[in-house]
Image 1 (cartoon, rainbow, N blue to C red):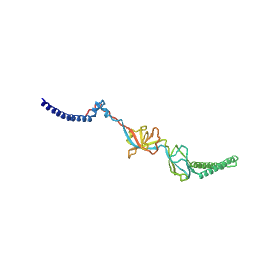
Image 2: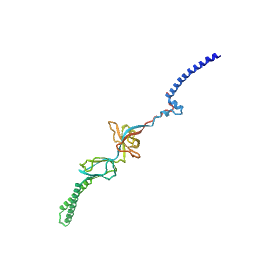
Image 3: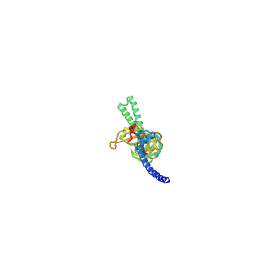
Image 4: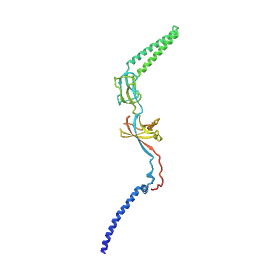
Amino acid sequence: MIRRCFVLVPALLLALVVAIPGGLAIAAPLQTLQDEHPRDNAANRGLSPGHLFQPSALRVESLRGQILPRDYTTLATELPARILQISVSEGGRFKAGDILVRLDCSLQQAQLQKARAARAAAEKIASVNAKLAEMKSMGNLEVATSVAEAAKAQAEESLWNATVSKCLLAAPFSGRVAEQKAREHQYLQAGQPILEILDDSRLEVEFIAPSSWLAWIKPGLGFVLHGDETERDHAAQVLRIGARVDPVSQSIKITGKFVGNTEGLLAGMSGRVVLDRPVKTVPSPANPTVP
C-alpha cells in the first residue's frame, strides 16, 4: 500500500508540470486573438462596435500666420524744407489729428503774405473801377480786366495757403510710430519719408491657404492663432478671402480678425494658425462582421 502511494505522488506532480505550461500556451493565443479583434472586446464591455470606428467630423489643419495692422502709412513731406519738430518718437502714441511733424516754411509763409496783399490791392482796384463805370468814367473792358486781376490774385493766395498747410503733418488716425526715418533739423526733399505709423488697435492676421480650402473656408469661420512670441492662443475668425488664386502655388490669401482682447499683440508677430476642417463622415455598419 505504501509503495503504491509513492508511485502515485510523482505521477500527479508530473501531470501538474505538463498541464501548467500547456495552460499558459493556450491562454496566450486567446489573449492575442482578443487583441486582434477589439470589436469583440468592445462588445464584451457593453460598447457598440461602431463606437471605435466612427470617423471624426473635424480635422485639425495648421498653417503659419502673421499679424498685421489694418491701417498703416508713411508720412512724407510734400515740400523741400527743414524739419523744425517731430513731436512723437518711435513707439510713441498719438491721436487722430495730432500734429506729428512741423516743417520750416518761412519762405512759403512770406509768399502767402505777399499773395494776400496782392489780392487785397486787386480787389480794391476792381471795386473803384466798378464805381467809375457807374459814373460813365470807365469803360467796360477796363472793369472786366480789373475783376479778372482780382480773381487771379485770389487764386494765387489760395495756392500759397495750400502750400503752407503742408508744413504741418497731422496724424490721419490714432496709433503709434513704428519707425522714424528722419531727424529734427534735417533738410528733406519733396517726397522723402519721415515717419511710419500704424493703428495697433485693429490688428489682423494673414495666412496663405491652399486654394482647395475654398470649398469649406468661409468668412466668419473661427480659428486660433498660437503666438510664437506670446506663447498663448488668440481667438480669431476669417474676415475676408483674397480676390484671386495664385495659379503657380495654387494658394490664396486669407485675412482674419481677432475676437476679444488683443493686449500683448504687436504688428509683425507670427504664429501657428489652427483651423478645424470639417470632413465627411461615413456611418459605420450596425453589425460589423469580425474578420
